[in-house]
Length: 396
Image 1 (tube, one colour):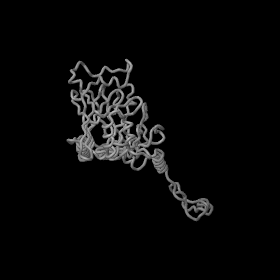
Image 2 (cartoon, rainbow, N blue to C red; image 1 turned 30 degrees about the horizontal axis):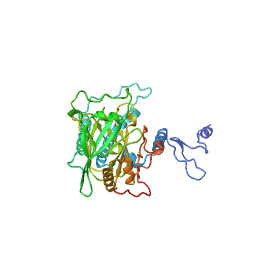
Image 3 (cartoon, rainbow, N blue to C red; image 1 turned 90 degrees about the vertical axis):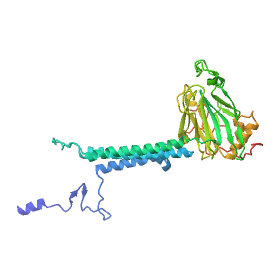
Image 4 (spheres, rainbow, N blue to C red; image 1 turned 90 degrees about the horizontal axis):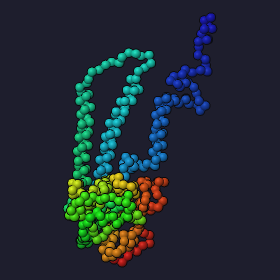
C-alpha cells in the first residue's frame, strides 16, 4: 500500500508545476521556455496604449500639433507668447490631473471593499502638515500662472507710438471694411489716407437688406458729433456678397488696428493671431479699447479672419482674409491704389503679382476646416499666393 500511495501521489513525468498561469519546465519546439503571459491588468494597459497611439495616428496629429494642445500655429510674436502661456497652463493642469487621477484609481483599486469583509477601515482625523501642503501648492501654482498671465497680457496689449501701418477696421452686418489710414514706406516717405468721419447709416447701402433684416442702427437720437464715429479713408477694401474682403498687410512691420462697428457687436478674429477683440458701436461712449497692435507678422501667406461674436442671421458667413506679403509688395500695392483710385482691390493685388481673390475662404462659406479632407475645394494655396509667370504692373 505504501508503494501504491507513493506512485499515486508522485507527479507524472509529463506534467509541470503551474506558477502564476505559466507552466514551469515546459519546453517549446525551438528549445526555449514559454514566455510568461500578461495578466488581465497588463492586457488592459496594452490595449489602452494601442488605442491612444491609434487615435493619434488616425487624427493625423503631428508632433508640433500635439505640443500646441489644439491651438493654431501663430504668426506674430504676441501669438507665440500666448501659446507658451497656454502650454504651461495645460502642463500644470495635467500635472494636477495626473496626481488626482492616480490617487483616485489607486484608492479604487487597493482600498475598495472586499467580498465578505464587513470590518470598518481605520479612521483618521486630520493631518496638519499634509493639509497645509495641498493648500499651499495650488496657491503657489495659481500665483505663478497669474504672474505670467499679467506679463503676457501686458505684452499682447502693448501699444507703441507711431506704428508703421494703421488700419481702420469697420464691421457691419454682415461684412467688413478696411481702410489704410497711415503707412510708412521702406524709403522713409509717409502716406496719410484719412479722409473723413461718417455715420453708421452710410453702410445701409453696402448690403441691401429686406425690412426684416434691417437693423435700426445705434443712432438713438444722438448728435452728429457722437454718431459720426466711423472713419473713412481714400484707400478702402469693402466686402460684399460676391467678394471676400482681402486685407493686405506687410510682414515685419508694427501694425495698429482701429476697430468700430456700424451696428451691433462684432468681433475681429484671425485664428493665427491667437487673439480676438470685440468690435463695438460707439467705442468711446462704451468705454472700450478700440485699438490693438501686432509687433509684426512673421510669415507670408493667406489667413482667414472671422467674426467671433454672434451678430445676426449671416454671422457664420462674415469672413475676411489677411494677405501677408513682403514689404516691397505692400509698398507697391499702396502706391498702385493711390495712383489708381478707381482700381479695385483685386486689380491692385493682380498688379503686384498676387492672387486677386481670397484663397482661404469664399462668400457664403461656413466651414471651419482649414486642412485635410474638410478643406473646401474652392480655396487655393494659402502658403503661396504669388501668381505664376507674372510681371508686376507699371507703377506697382
